[in-house]
Length: 337
Image (cartoon, rainbow, N blue to C red):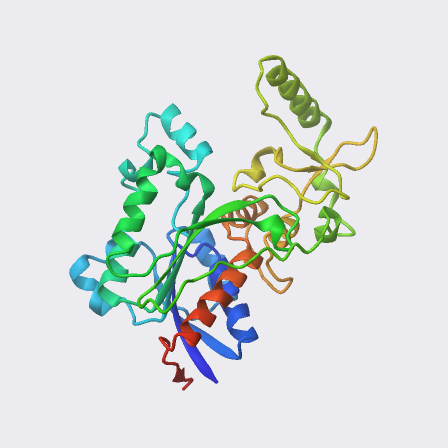
């Protein structure tokens, strides 16, 4: 069996790693993650539960430029779902309200791309896959994305990024994300995967039985309704979204879902309070397998699932990336020891 060595940066709970593993298996390969980075302790807990004995660097910023060569393992593919909050509409709004910087000016999260860039420049893996919110494409009139691409294209063939929607790849969730891939050597045009257009419904991802604690209270339900009506009168579209199990998709589930479930409240029938999704259902809507384990509180599980990548989409991208590498003979695979 052949091995693909990977790096899993800003890993969350390992969604991109799961995607790569599924892709390698379908191509008769094997993957080995050499290192992951994740600063959140609860996400680390879930990651290590599912992927024990993986080398961890908590804060990628702790690795200085002159330390990269020795501290970062050699790898074939770099995976990175770098923090999206500094570029997302909600994140920008929140930062403005708090009078905090956003975009590249956010020195805690917004400039982390440059840490990725330095690793790519020094370690030169054969390929990379980056993921972020759709709003990165238009943020600051596209200037930030332009800077990112110009940096990457100094060393890599980087086709134009692609925005893909999870609901086009067999997941009942509207989740549009931008993906950027790159290859150390150019051997022909890379094409992103085409939508599978598999027909699914929200009910396909729901539990048959659920704990009554997920049914929202009379007080919260009334609050949701009052707020939505008030916003409607003020010409705003903000408010809860009632989702029928027979619908094709939910709204995008965010890491804030734990607060009130407003993005997706499951309709239970007339004169019945709707319910929130369970943490398992949210992970399921992201494409995580039933075998995926999480031993954290519901609050943390919602955050982790909401921050994760849609597995089905990233898996398809991984397959195309691996095919490109194999086809172009750029990838020299080593035997698994």
